[in-house]
Length: 611
Picture 1 (cartoon, rainbow, N blue to C red):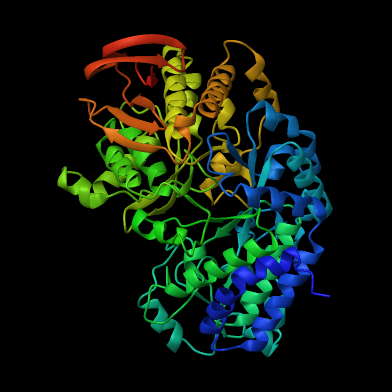
Picture 2 (picture 1 turned 135 degrees about the vertical axis):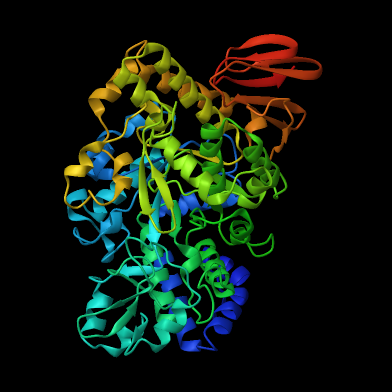
C-alpha cells in the first residue's frame, strides 16, 4: 500500500529543501546538526495539542488573518495588570470590554530577581517566574483567549541568556560544550578588536560589550553584564533555542516576539548588527514555524531606522518576520507634539506609503521602553534643527522644563558627556493630563484629553495593528513610587510601568470622568476602524498638503472608498481648505457634510469618508 502523506509530510516536502540548504550553508555542512533539528521539528509537531493544530489549519486557509482592520492590541505586565496569570484569567472580560483581541504579555519567564532587566535576562525558557504562576497557568490563559478570539504574544529573548541559566552555570564551571554556547576569551585581545567597531547599547549604565568574570575570563555581554550573548555560529545554540521557541508556541503563544534580533550574529570588524546571517536565521525560524505551527507569527523587534527595518520582512519568495514595530513613527509623533510642526511626520508617512502593502507594522504611542529620539536629523538640519540642540529641546519639553510645556516625564540614560538622553512617561502624563489635574485646571484638562484622543486616532489611522499600552485606555498617569524601590529606582522606565489601578479604572464607567472620556473615545475609534474596510493594511495611503504645518493630512483608499484624515497637533484651532467640494460622512460624529473649508478644534481630528 502507498504510504499515507501526513500533514507534517506535506508541509516538510514543500519547505525542507530550502531549510536544509540554508542550514548546511550557515553551519558548514553539519549534517548531524540538521538531522537533530529535523527531530526537533517532528517532536514538537507531534506534541502540539489538537486545538492548536485546528487553529493552524484555520489560519493556513486564511494567511492574511492578521492583516485586516479588526485587530487591536494591548501590551501589559502580568504582575502590574492583575498580580499573576490567574489574575489575568479573571480579568479576561476587560479585554473584550476594551475591544482588545491581541494581548502582548511582557516577559514572564523565569529570571533572577536582582538582575532581570525587566524579564529580559531569562534563566529558564520553559518556566514561568514563580510569583506569576506556572506553565500550566499560561496554557490555561492562552486556551481561554483562543476561545474568546484573542491572540497572545510573548517575548522570545534570543540574543542572550541570564548568567544564571543552566548553560551559563555549566560554562562557568568549565564545561567545554556549554562554553561553546557563549563568547569566552582568556584575554582582552579579541574583545578589544570587537570594541573598535561595535557600538555600545547602554554607554552610561552598562558601558562596553564585554564583562570580566571573577576568574578573569571575559564574556561577551552586549546589553548588561548579567546577560551573556549566545553564539549562533554554534548550531547547538540554534537547534536548542529553536526548540525553546517551539515549546512556547505549543503553550499556545500566537506571536513570538524576537527580542533584539538584529544583534544575534557576531563578526569581528563589524558593528555586529544586521549581518546577513541574522536574516538566514530568521528565515529558517519562519520556515520551521510554517511546518510545526503555521498559525504562529514572528514579530521582529528591530529598533532602527526604516532602511534597516524593512529587510526583516524578507522577500515575497522568502519571507522572514510577519510583523515589525513601527518605531520611527512613535518618535516622530512625539516630536510633532512638542514642535507643533507636522512636516517631519508627513515625511515619515511618505516613506511608509512607498513600502509594499503586504508589510504589517505594529503601531503604538508608548511601549515598555523609553522613547529614543531616532529622528531624521539630516532632514531636520536642512530646516535649522541640529541634533544635539533639538534633542535637548525635546527632552526639556517632555520633562516640563521648557516654558509653557504641560508634559510630565523623566529622562532615561541621561549621558552628560554626549548630552543625550531618552524619555519615559505615560501617554496621559506626556499629553498634559497629570499637570492639569495637579493644577486643578479644567480647561487645561479638557485640552490634554483632546490631545490624548487625537494621538490615538492618528495611531488607528496608520496601516497595521494598533497596540495600546495597558493603562493608556483609561489615561493612567506616571507612577513615581518606583523611586522608593531599591531594585527599580535607577531605571526611570518604571515611571510608566506602574501597577494598573483598578479603582481608578472603574472611573471609566462614570460619565464625565477623564477616564470615561478616553475609554469611550478609544472604544468608538476601534469600532469605526473595524467597520470600515478603508482601514485594512492593504489599503493605499498617502499624506497630503493641508496648508498648515500644524495639521497632518492622510488619504486612505481601498476598493472605491476614500478617507480623508486630518490631525491638528496644535492647541489652537486650525482651518484646512480643500480644492473642491467634498461630500463626506464624519465617521466620529456620524454627520454627513459637504465642505471645502474644514474647521478643526484645538487637538481635533477628522475621519471623513467620501460619500
